[in-house]
Amino acid sequence: MTDELQLENHVCFQLYTGSRLMQRMYRPYFDEWGITYAQYLVLVCLWKEDGQTIGQLSDPLDLDSGTLSPLLKRMEVHDLVTREHDPSDFRKVHFSLTRKGKALEAKAKAMRAEIRDQLGLDADDIAALHRIMAKINPSLTPSDEPAA
Image (tube, rainbow, N blue to C red; front, top):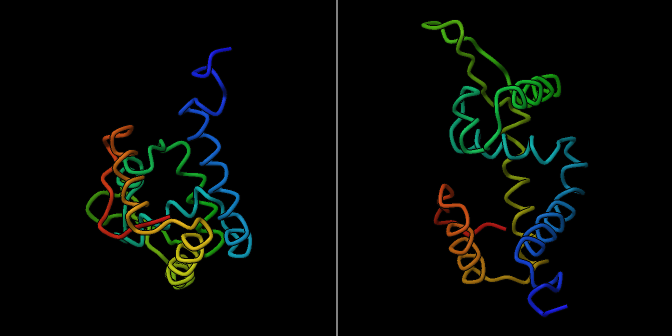
């Protein structure tokens, strides 16, 4: 077998294992908070801009309404979000953070700092990862704040 076909030399494998590692690092926090990884991503979107519709959440998360609807319903049951129909168009439903959902933002910031420390990556390393990922997925535009 040639070196280029070695498993560890496949970029897809590196991305796959890196993603799984990150999710394993996040899992203890999410278990403690009673949320899933997908719910965390919804919270991240709502922390940036509260009161979004399923359509607004769908694009950045790359999830369809059939996936988001039950996920948001579970988040509502767990008192993380509330839903409110748009008075001008009853078909539109806006999702807003509850006090419990808002409180997780501070915990998430602490979690991110702890995970950055565990990874041993500095701001330059993280910025380089974001630049590389933007080449792979141009629809992702990293913010100015380094994230893990």
